[in-house]
Image (cartoon, rainbow, N blue to C red; front, side, top):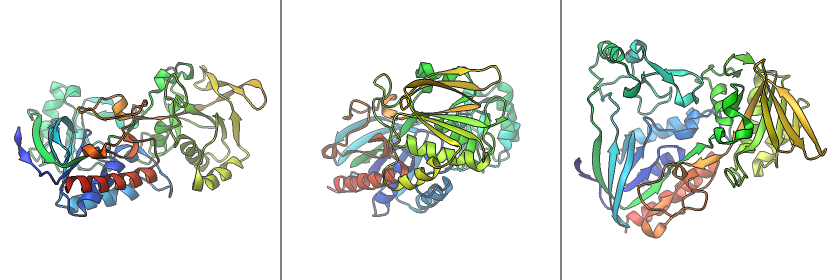
Length: 419
């Protein structure tokens, strides 16, 4: 265990997505010492997996690169990736936090030259692309990874692979005996920006997610459309790489359902309209079918949705999807009720996109400290305790809302840690 670091005036930010980055920079740029920790090998969170995001429809680089640069240039920020909170003790304004950093098996000599990845013979499903392609056991998490350093998946590494990557590295950067590291820090307040996971579509049995490659989630669509995705930005059906002539979007896949997520995830309708744009750019005449309960595109997004609703090749069916039937040719047939026409309808399409909802991470991965949460697992800020929720740990939100409430969280943390 390393010696204690930080002071009672410092701030700990848990989670390195857009919310954690925002809270970190807001606190650090007014002079606070900030510890930013992230459980994954790189920062960026879900935004780094997007093709484009609202409101400017820009790629992740336009928001993340400048934040990475600001963090790199600020001496008050200390970043620990592959790090989790093990325990929290103390009182508001004077917390002692134990952190554990998992071994990366690659040290600071790494230049991200890629030699180890090229030499590595071992491959596993690529979690960044939701299993739609493979990655090596020695890998860079993604093109925009920060810190830009390789990581070794030791569990996926064979004996032959271990020798190959060590022989390939010219910088003595690979250390397969690297231990986990524990450190204790002192902080005055903690911002919990632990983010969200896409709801597990396998749990929605009638939508058959695990029975056909033609059934994907909205986050998988983001990766398909991304230039650094599994198909280099070309939207093709997983499995057989067929071009798309028809696609169905199933809204509220698991959301607004007492058996799954009882709440509206706020962003799903807007994400679908955005993804219809992706399809339209590549397939101008493709048929698009949207099955919905209600279409919710608040405020400034109304104009965006109006343009697509006027598209003669986009069809909106108000009603819930009852079943999706995989077909022998690789396509699927969607069975639904049309509430407006009061009848059952079916439509064969090349691919289905499930608009799965946002589930707070802590609903699936309990935190090491007792924090208040609502019935759905979203955290409730406890300002008196110096425990502040931010971003999608607090509520289902788009990027703009996340940055706004993360700024507010940083201000609260500054006040508490300065007592």
